[in-house]
Image (cartoon, rainbow over all chains, first blue to last red; front, side, top):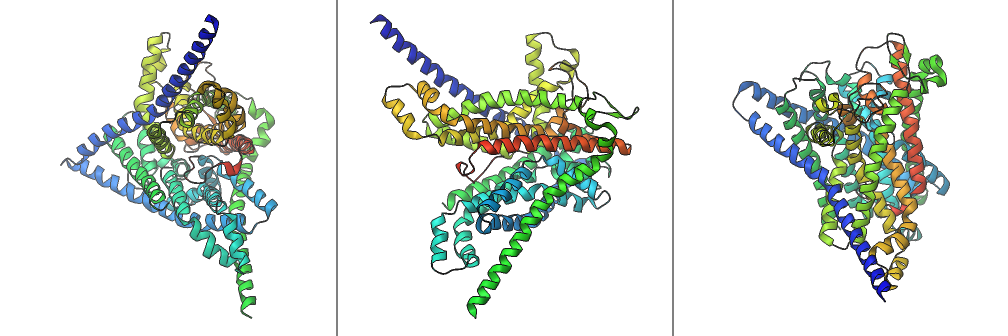
Length: 274
Length: 304
């Protein structure tokens, strides 16, 4: 009798220990994000408030900040305009047209590509086009990195369309072409937009593909050249000892706000159309 | 007549799409080919010994990958240890502890963690992680003076990498656990098993493969991360033999190696490092994919 009770207690204690370890680990997993948001938020807001002050040099710093933001958005828009249609088209083929084996092979190839590190995209472009305008090089490097990611994401969204819908449409006499535009794309529109926005949010902060193309961002001296926000941030950080902390924090906060806003938009579309 | 033209359009559309597929896959082949061609002089010069030459010496024209392999392996191991232990337990908590608000808040936060760019992680590492690690290790005693001064080194880089990889591990492990058969877990509970016993005996055996896959994918991501690591690892190609020593990883060296003007051989050696990184990440990515059933993953909001 005594041993049975103690066995039961032991199991209960073990279970309680298990649950509390799980809870503690979950808190530990969330802690870095809270710390990150807190530190960047506090320093960034203080820095932005400082930059909004009247001093002339600070005002130019603010202007540079806005310039970097605009260049960032332009780069992103151009890269997305090139890679989204191409990637989605490839995904339509691999999910709707390709046979079972061909589809599997295409998917495997694109999967492996999408796992390749972002820094390699910049290196490859540097080797292919060493002397080209930084804007073009930056956009192309981003496209090279983004294309397989877009194709893979879109393929997964399109593959999630219920087969019964597609078969129904084909049974009614619609061609593949009609099925895609009347059934597949309308059914998956919301998920597709959400997933692509999520990809864009991740790409908007990519520094590595731009890095090597723009020669670390240091050649053209300060804000004279073409420097999207993430790149500016990196070059400010690596310029060494005397980097202007205020500007770095303000830039970081700005970038964070833009990216979280795109992410929030994706979440909101996902929520409101389901 | 009409029917023929519909068929015609269908065929044209399909071939346009097929060309797009070829462009996407061709871009990947172009990637690999460019790396191989650009690395050719170095491959010819050093052969296989590139892997174990432990010097990166522009003066004597001697370049080897060993210091960078060492830096990568060490930082990635720390990252995987952290992300594996914390990430897998968090995923278990998210699926097994039935508190709705905790579940949605934590998954939201982890998704945000996944979109934050690596430069921002770099700033956070300089601002928070490095000072905290210096203070913690100072309290534990016996810290090299150099680390105490800057906080740069293998340990800091590994911890930051661990945080960056965690969303991947949590999301994939959660999918793996969710796709384990429900009835067996329910049967275990019906037989009077505690939560802990259910997880250990009726859930984990089915999720083991998926968890392994998530760790492989996390490994591939950790190897390829350049920007945040290069900000805190110290950027010195040396084999320090200590967690507090400065080092350099394959990816982080690429972030700063091409900016300086170097000899053609040096540039080729840098590209060979890139090729090596490409091979390593492809292998781990392929392994991870092999372990994870594709349709088990929800297509929306994928954090990797």
